[in-house]
Image (tube, rainbow over all chains, first blue to last red; front, top):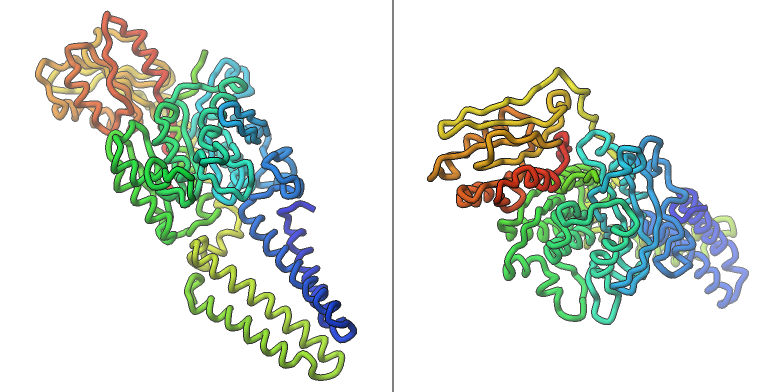
Length: 345
Length: 227
């Protein structure tokens, strides 16, 4: 039974029902201690089923071992995928790798999408552009793969020539699933920014046939990952030429430890106080999601040349995976049009 | 009733409390069978309404699903993919020159341009280059030597004319210039079509400069999906 299967939720509901009937049935035959036990037995499966459903929506823990193993070391991001999320014949491949983060000290799992061309004779002497796809909080690389069906989307956009063949990387942004790093270097905590920027790039340069110049590196993210994408591109224009944000905020909403959430890690502050770099930004949000609308439109209002800004406001959709499934193909197309092409050696 | 409205949350919350009160009130009424029924139903109602109240309040705070239709959309399958562009239509060759009052404008299309519709190509603009430039793979090259004193605004019709008459991208262009046209190049590259600062080519290294410029261009692509 998988952690995010419908059967698991159904089983949880059935157990809750049975426990409730047991509570009603055995109440009169038990003393105080027994009745407390019955009540706890009725509440526990209810709480567990609610938590499982919340996890199912966010794909924070993609397997039981990820939940009980304790670390962000998924054995495989590609096992037991639902049909809509699986790689198909003629499409790209999905790998699970471990990035030994020498600069950050973090060693984390990363998903790697290799376009179909990567494995063809024509692609053998090519180096590909790279997009790093960042997840929200709570979330994981599996959210992209399982909830946003990103493999199918990339296959379709590349096959339709709306996107160049591109290597897409899905790194974890935190060593602990429920620790929100917002891709920053937390004082006294995980150095997520260093991992997502320096360590991931070093791994890709060593192990994958990718271009390493900034013109061919881009970022994309939804929710907290959208903030990450914009913030990291603004902070590291020497590494990234373009970034796309789906429902991202202008500030991290966490305490980083050095007060930089109010200054250098606050996009609004940065755009008002520091010279803008030469990058391209794609900022998209749903008008009925007030927090993202406020943050994203602030970024849109403050972005000045040489930042090349594109905005996309959707009327409806909230802050949901259904919205991001509508947004991701246009954002990937836009990114590809703003990144350098595959390079033939 | 709105999904994120306070009335619905209040309804669920007060419903849970009322169900709890009623369940306690009737907990020990009736015979065994009736007790089993009222207790089970009562506790289930409390559970469902309490979970609903918490979920609704959290959804209101985070605006995950602002409306009922957003909630329904979450469960549904992803929208069908936009169709791939139609198979290549009739050959659609690029112009070889553009009319401009200032000087002759040469357009050089890459191999395969005519048959790759609807794919659009990025552009390398060359100011003051030699008369004959080699074609560049997967890019359209536009070469012109504007007379001294030409302003960027005077060259605007060349850019709009190219966008109208050839399948070129709207942005991601690169500008190469000789040292005489540096000022003009700087003005021009402030336009939205250009992704980077102009490259000044010295010592007649035009071929190498074209190769380097092409390496920085995006791939030829079909029109993006619009959200």
